[in-house]
Image 1 (cartoon, rainbow, N blue to C red):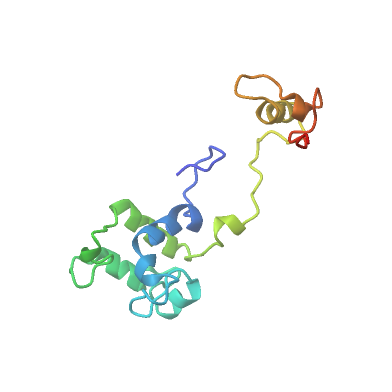
Image 2: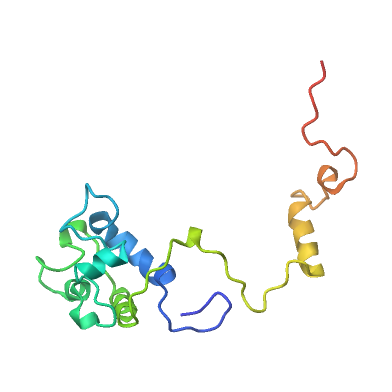
Length: 162
């Protein structure tokens, strides 16, 4: 796996690696919708998954989730065959690694403050200002927009004439 900074990482991250697998294959039956939930199991809430022993942090071999995703029995395997969804070998391994590492959940990415990536240009740098000016103050033809840069008319939406 590669981190956005370009550095290699073996750490399984819930939002990047696990949430997409669970959302695509599990949450329809084991997610937030109480009217669709099967077996009274929620996999979208860590405490609920741990209480039901679907996930035993640090012990994938004791986790019911792992037992079901590795099963070859059509009555036990998850996701069930009738959903026409299957997990790849890589997805199964990621889930096992995540549980072995403690099965930590993360808040949805939209609620997490963005992290600064080492080596990224500082926003106040000259390069950053030129980049921002290029993207924000030019039109598709590459010309500066006088209404946004202070030249010419500055009122983008002038009042209608009577």
